[in-house]
Length: 334
Image 1 (cartoon, rainbow, N blue to C red):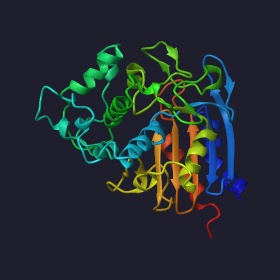
Image 2: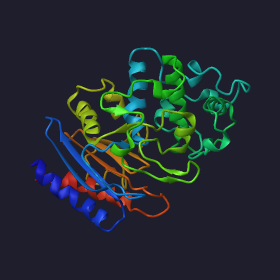
Image 3: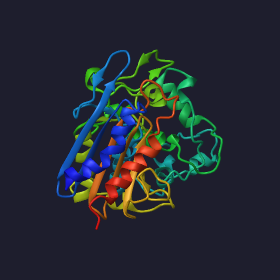
Image 4: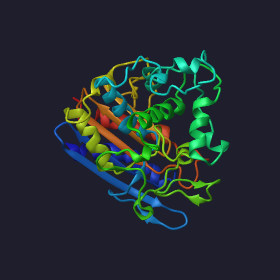
């Protein structure tokens, strides 16, 4: 059954590689009993030389960092009573907008950050304000952010990452244990290449692609590397209850589109419209994604290097994710 499911779901991925919309991909599926199937296609790198994609290839997981690393740790700290999710961030970061006691940023809570329910802007090129990571951390904390409607914003998880640094008394997120099967960097010859960076003047390969994460030398919103099997191991732990004990909060809705850290099903979401109502998921800018269907007791991860060698073209990743999700969710249903 697992092989048939993989065959059914892999077809649009093979087509995307054949049509050169993405260089390569790895699809992995696991069920709650631990049965898994993995298939690989295409290239891990095409520029300046060619390397084939492999099952063991390390991927820059990008925003999957939010749900694999940062969210579980924040929720565990809440379960242990170290933080209160409904307390403002200043309970851990008292210097947040410290020169403006009435600033709205000082009222933002941990739970609001997890659910992207804050007024922070969607995209901010923090890396353009300097090269000193300590200075950039101070910038994030003291900058007068322009308030707007609640949108998905990396600032929420950058701040959660700063809170983790304070609680664990480390200077950088990358000093924290990334967890079994994960890392904060990877050997270039073992990694899927990402973008030919216009300000770092190199093909990013084994080094974090995210500009702000790179400039901050680690942050809560990006930076984690992993293989397909490490991502499936994490998903299996959530499916069978052997992983993060805070999974109930990860499944608890905070809005029509989000739970604590994760996306939940909505019309048009990346996991496909055939996913069960009990499905959560998340995507990463580099071309990664993870979805966990608790009703059907299966999870799948689609890992691609869709921004290699550039982000400035339409890879069709949105449609590909949805097509794969629909096929994973419908195969085998009576």
